[in-house]
Length: 226
Length: 226
DNA sequence: TTCATATTTCGATGAGGGTTGTATTATTTA
DNA sequence: TAAATAATACAACCCTCATCGAAATATGAA
Image (tube, rainbow over all chains, first blue to last red):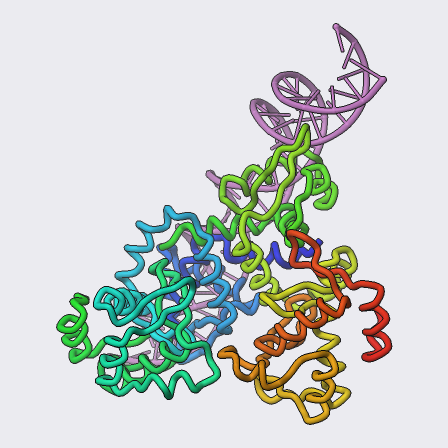
């Protein structure tokens, strides 16, 4: 019926190729030798697979000297991989835990324009535990106590409510399989925490670096240990 | 690294299985003999593949007499298939055109809560051609002329603007590869056109039926021929 | 030029998986 | 009860494709 769906899926179906793509999901560039090492195959084999994925526009290359650096061709590819992880069987938990430790992108990253990853989920949970945030259906809302807390951070509820975006919808985290805060509030939180120096952006990546100050504050205020 | 991504992709990577899944994307139930016929394989083969997909929670069965009816297990599966079609090579156009004619879901369907498919895209284009709608970046906006037109349909701009959703963002259509109207305006349009009797919902499906009245109006007002 | 490193090409091997024929079970019809 | 239909189970065949050794190419260093 549509042979191309099968073709593109076949490209993702090989363990070596999926390991490579998963590694490239951090948005940064990687030399082929590193990808071979991560996928636990010989360089010839990795080269073979990278060429297949080049032809299919899944990845792209940049030559620098005798190295060739590979990266994902588009954010759409990353999105497909995320979606596939959503419906992957639950037995993934163990290997996901291993994987999580290996890559910064699982610790803290941006999801569109808000905070996601382990820190994003933990912060959401902590805000609820402390009675700053409530969850109803698929949306969060802030309490009177929460309003005061946010103002300390420099976030004025009124300003956010005035924007045309949804206030604070749930967003499902693919590594954590739990919800975190999205929408206007999620964005305001991220912007303010960046400005406050808890996190810094890692260039060309959706990954965030947790600064020493951020580590301290997260532990002190929310008992989040990294 | 994460073996399950490869496993789930492997399930989608077989032409027979992808043909079956694509057929099931209309949301309705199908007996296994029909799926075998569509995938152009013997019943044994289809049965073999359906079992694999059952084990992986991609599809589910209902027994009725000596028939077994299959359907997609969840909307998440449908979403993954849509995403995969996005990054499928452009050579898909021909086969997509064939496929389009075979299934009502390509003509008109709901996408979340707004109108999509061939009709959704054509209607969006017609509204722009007639100067009712303008497109800037990733959002649509209505003109003074458009405001009057919408009021005839019973849509009051003020009511929509007050909702907290985005007004009228673009949404990419996977069968048409063009944009259609989403957001608050997209929803209002769909609701009003359903009420006006241009379309009717097909139960248990995201597909929409274009009523005789709808066919007439679409041709008269927008020169959309079905 | 000579050596070392990074990557690719070619060729042989072998495993995994899709297809189908035959047989079996379950259900409906006569 | 017998015959017909829907679907599944088992087994043999076949074929694609990932893998890796050996060799070739390309770049950089000494």
